[in-house]
Image (cartoon, rainbow over all chains, first blue to last red; front, side, top):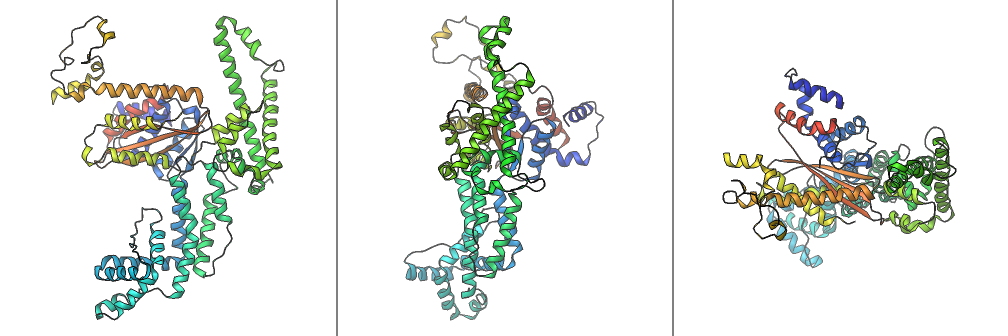
Length: 447
Length: 142
């Protein structure tokens, strides 16, 4: 692709290239691709990238895919979990009409009160009388996460005041009566709403949790999703049961266990709280390999390549110390006596890696309950594990535990950008704006 | 108008502008006659002092880059696009890693302007500006 681009570019310079429709449509996509590539190469990070987390916009997705395939960078792509769970909720609500209907009704009640000041004042008086304090009714926005849930929750909270207000308005003039004829919630609907909100509650809490966390890693997140799916069904009403079933299906689809990406599987494996879960013993479809076995083989490969890197690093440093004249001496010093040639070295490293990985898995099997404490900070486990041969596996764990589950970090950055490039400072030049952004990030940079 | 444009094109030479506070180290340097854009009488303060911010940011970025290359084996990025209220499009990228002390670290590695209008000219500009870096050497042009 890059070669193709270069050739097209050259053609364009010669004035031979005609603009076609494809080019116009995909130019923004292409710019994204170029930009991401430039930034990463400018920092010299191509070889260091393991995973990129973004939202599921088609252009950015395609851009990273192009970047991955065409510039030979082994960088996986992950969709942002918060965005994904919101999509799941919306799809599930759309496909379960009962629950959707109840929530729509709440929306109608909410908008009725927000548009009628008289009714609202009566409602407020009723709230004062019943609860001693007032709650506002909320509005719904498609782009605001969980706004439907929050709105319905608020309606449910003050439902008694709302019903008494409706009964009072019913005695009023005829025009009012017609408006509120089908608005009040019956007891049946009330209990259905309660159940539906109970189903949606963990999703909403998950979104809040994922958003609050400054850098939420995928290793922390997967157990929570699994918890959410494996909760027992306790709802009695039909609407809530349908919604729950749909949600479970969609969650299983979005975070599949069987076809989990390699980088994510490794991240899970290196979180001891997650690797000791019973889910890791599940067999993947096909040749009966368990998840744990697959993770072990992947981890062994990763450790071997890390050992190779360490060896190269050692050799380079020894060469620097001894000077270029004494390369033979340097090789003698750094090489282990066992390592005669590259093949033997590879075999030796593989044995070492297998030993390290097996030791880790054995510890997990002996006492899985012990690792519950590392669920949210798996890095701490690897910090504390300073045994003789663990250097390589510790480094591998370090490199896989940083994979981000959500794209909140960059969204937070851009929210800050919004306050810098406000209406008062809209004429700030690009250069100064970017400088200010970098200044802010330096303050937060901790070594 | 003409004046500003020429200043912009001469931006790198502005970094040689003599500062107001007396710098003992600089006094020992051989004195060179400031040219008309360096004498400070005509240019606006924000143009004169632009290089101070630019250089400090650049220096800090170089420090962080060295730190990353020495201490971090692998990391992950997150990326997101954004449009400002005056319709400028930006692309923010953050880099995440586990530090040698086994805590999570993160750094902003990019906030790139994307030229928005999708005409042939802007595309061509983008190619000459970004494309070459991606296609050719991947040299660190920080």
